[in-house]
Structures are given as structure tokens and as C-alpha cells.
Image (cartoon, rainbow over all chains, first blue to last red; front, side, top):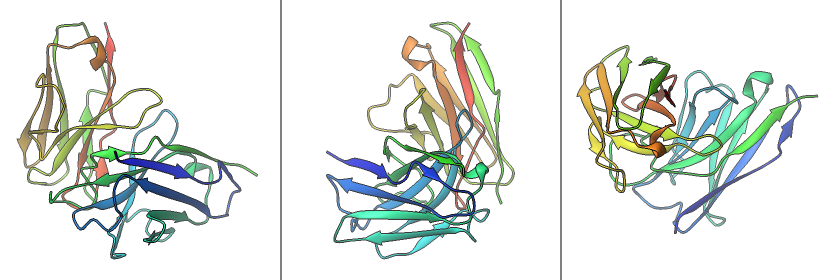
Length: 124
Length: 106
């Protein structure tokens, strides 16, 4: 049974880099019909797609975040990661990892399975 | 960037009601639109993809329609478990979510 688990520091200082990992169990990050994504949500607000990655390392980023985002795959550990640099208070919120499975069109969705999310605060 | 506008932002309804939520894209996205349901403290759940395709395990009381720039999500016969926030998402070019519609008890 597929499980996605986000992990990382719950508190990041302004101007520093937010780093999160999504650990996958019950599936393989090398599945050729899967795209793995990160989506975030400020508390009480809406959803924002951050980016998606294919097992080969091909990445697709939200243009509004592209200059600060790096996603990568760790195949041996069956994980993928997110790095967001130069964070501000506007980057605080819940961060979800998710997956689009099957040969459906799209790299930014539709995400048919999600992790439970992790809350990141930004404060000095 | 493709903008997605969802309406209404809040909808008050009773059990058994038929409710409709609208999503408009700033340019044509074909039928590359998904709908999600989110409950407090939980991750979103995919309901519909490609505008009108019901995700496996989702009740048939949920339906989606539309193409191009206008889309709708309809819940026919609102159940207590359906009170939640709903989001649309375009995935034609990158991805953009609508602002969300909270369906609350009247």
C-alpha cells in the first residue's frame, strides 16, 4: 500500500533554505508512469503547486517559484526532495508531497495520492 | 501563467441539496482540469480528473463537466460527509489551483 511521508525541519529562519524529503513506501520512485510533486498551503488558505519531478530527474517548477526551487530524486533511498531558498514568512505553511500515477496527461497533476503534509514555520 | 477563478468562495447548503461549483480558466485548457476535496487537517483527495472522469472509489453523486475555460463540479444529493472545501486545478500548462469553495451546512 502506497505511503508518502514528508519530513524535515518544522522551523526555518528567514533568508535560509527550507529542505524537505518525501519518503515513498509501497511504490517505486522509478515507476515510468509516475510524476512526483510538491504542493504547499498556507494555514487557512489555498493550494499552490511548487513543482514536479520525474524519476529521471526532469523537473518542472512553478514559474513564480522557479528561481528559488530545487527538486531532486534519490533512487536508492526511494525518496525525492525539495529545497526552497531565501525563505520569508510567506513561505510558511503545510507542505505536501504527492504523486500522479498512470499515463494521464500532465506533469503538475492530477495528483491521485498525497502525503499527510508537514507544517513549516518561518521565524528567527 | 494560467489563472483559475473558482466561485463561489462559500456555499451554504443542506443535506440532500444539489450544489454546483464553477471554475473558470484565463485561457483554454482543453479538459485538463481536476477537482479535489479537502477536509480540515487532511490532505486533498482527488475526485475528478480530465474535467469529467470520476476517480476510482469516488461516489457517483460527484460529477464534473466543461471544457475550454468553463468547468463545473456538481454534487447531487449532498451527504454529511461532503461538507468540505473543494478546489479545482488546471494541469494543462504547469499547474494552478482555484481559490477553493467551502461547502458549509446551512
